[in-house]
Length: 320
Image (tube, rainbow, N blue to C red; front, side):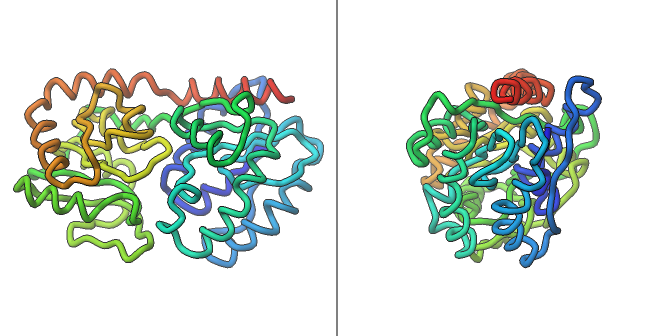
């Protein structure tokens, strides 16, 4: 099985977390021989070459002789000697192209639908993303399987917690993370905000931003927070929701879309366009902390990388 691991060279965000978790769960399985495939590094030139020459030319050549090729994002070949799967993490590029830099809008939107339709199967990370894939990309429903995400073992309620009284926001600094409304809601609620995540695009900034942190520090911040504020405007899954729950931290997230699906009844769901509603949600989460902690811990336990790996292998066997 050939697996595209390029996201590990590009980012530490959700797609890379998915690849890392999947590979870790597949390791040691006698019935699966995984061949990692990748090109280039994190730079812009490498990204351009990867998005064009590698995926449309180099990757198909590298897949010769494989039983199955697994593309871990929407980027993949238009034709491949081996049957292949494509994982769709979200379709923000198609649904909200105005929120992305020009290169991503151009290269991503041109490739995403043809690649998805060329794949033997599309693996969507949520039911929400499955519906988006069918509607926006024209992929037949029978060609889509839902296989979600999970979280790293370091995200547990046991361990050191950061000091202070604060609300935590987690994510790349980009427009759809809704940081301006988070800041306004925290101000209305009379609370302190801490923001962690990679620098992004769209002139998004915050005086509360503390940069990127490793997973151990992120878990420490989750444990110490009053709650996680994650009122994103668009997500395909929302891994921080699960990470916070696994650390015993209450979650406030958007009432529609994938994050509501992932959270279930274990979070406070709000209108992400209304700072007053977000502020009220923060107070509600803090007041219901003990209840939401138990609900969140149970919800997080339902998502495992072992389950993700089992479902992915089943999809590969389906097309091999």
